[in-house]
Length: 308
Ligand SMILES: NC(=O)c1ccc[n+]([C@@H]2O[C@H](COP(=O)([O-])OP(=O)(O)OC[C@H]3O[C@@H](n4cnc5c(N)ncnc54)[C@H](OP(=O)(O)O)[C@@H]3O)[C@@H](O)[C@H]2O)c1
Image (tube, protein in one colour):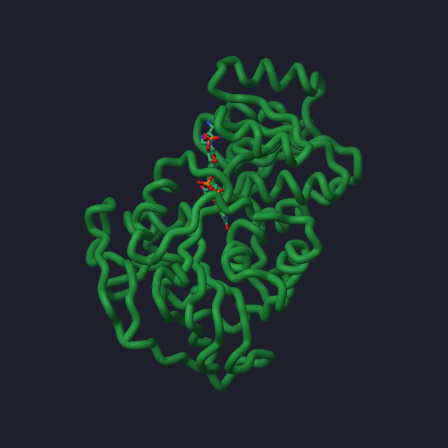
């Protein structure tokens, strides 16, 4: 049996419930892992709230929270290639099995072995925030020296973008609340505190002709406010708000394959990407981690660490 945190109905945090389930058996395309660490993401509470029925509307309750995890392979489905029992891996639970659990199923093609030196807590942040940041930069394909604005630079995707953009020689500016200033300036990015008012005017002061690209992780009115700062409309990318298309921009095109996971893991062990884990929680306190992310002001990444 495996302990898990999930929910018995769609709704707010009050529907969350701890329970035990049998270890799920892998289907032909899946791997069963013992979870060492799971990443905590906004998508987790969006799914719990029933806002993304296309992803989990068909699954039976109780559903388990979480989309990404790192751990050790316990069993491999017949059609999965390149993975074996005992491998340390990271990947996506696109199977619907959740990851806030002691064991879970990952999709074989969206699971990668991780380097020996990469801690599982870091590896657990590779699938969602890590590869999203990489996908944004691949999509933009900017030359070194180009300017980029990251709206919402202090969260999981934002802080990864800050580092990977800097690593590509881009000139990075980002917005965040006051608690993010130190974290962000340490990456070499210019920080603009959006809580001080007139954020667009203050950003314009940094880039009178606009930014070569604008990446938004916040959405809503904040996205609409910063969109005109993109030098060209198609240099606007949003990671969490599909309405970006109405502004002439695009959503990030995601790649969930093994090669992309490996690239991010390698950037981490090369010292070029730190997920900035601001909190690690035992499974018994996973609800607190999710509540912090749901507050929309989390710093860097939060993880569930099964060793705690
Ligand atoms: N398409 C995909 O595959 C994909 C993948 C990953 C994430 N996403 C989406 O991308 C979004 C961000 O994800 P995440 O993991 O980075 O979330 P996160 O870790 O919760 O970070 C969000 C950040 O936004 C900041 N923020 C909130 N309001 C702001 C504002 N008005 N201006 C500037 N910053 C503001 C928050 O902190 P402060 O306000 O305190 O600075 C926080 O650090 C979510 O909507 C998520 O669902 C999509």
